[in-house]
Image (cartoon, rainbow, N blue to C red; front, side):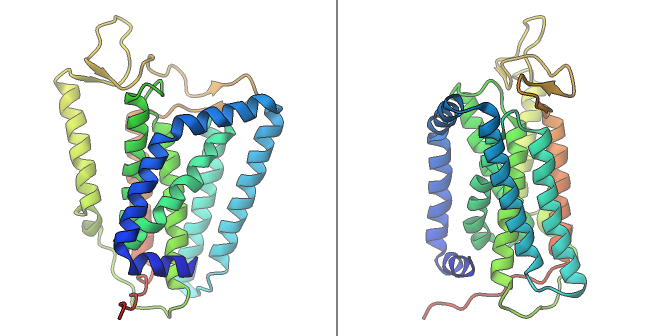
Length: 288
């Protein structure tokens, strides 16, 4: 992984191309992949299929934990790194139990963790990388909604994408730091994050949605009275309960738009705090 990250940092144009291709392939192939997963699930027992995916998820979580523990950090920086890694693993476990209707949705974790590698190679900032990948995941979810392949703009999936981005950024950071001695830690400066291009895109997106909602052009859920806005982000009514049960014994929570914004702000902000306690990734040698 270290060699791959070195390569991505040295070849920024290829990293950018990898980002574009990943988003395009994820967006265009989503329906085909979903159909394939449903076919496999229908040809096997539901419990067997979900148990297999659960086992794979456990292995991935263990490998991520081992990666963090083996990063050979000591002192305060080591504790922050370990805490960051264990938090990412805990978020995956909690999301697995609370945000997924099907266990197959855990594919969001590796899918968007993979995208975080070239994104981090381009930005070299932990919190900005997580935010960029989350925004690109939002683009994917928006495409699914407007292409009529999804009943609503899925904020659950957006949070799953964020958690996957956090895991991938962690691996990318450790890959670039592992072979270098610690360097001076920068003071915590939240202004760097709130003024970043990724944050500005979020502000614009939220502002456009807010103005559209106030102007009556945008609605979040279908109205019981049938008096709906021209654009509604859900083709069903507002969630009427906290937990929704399934026929296969699983229950999940439907994330509302405001919940999604709060969780994104909290998790990205926490990773900005962690970033301020870690040594910056080492500068890469220039190609001759």
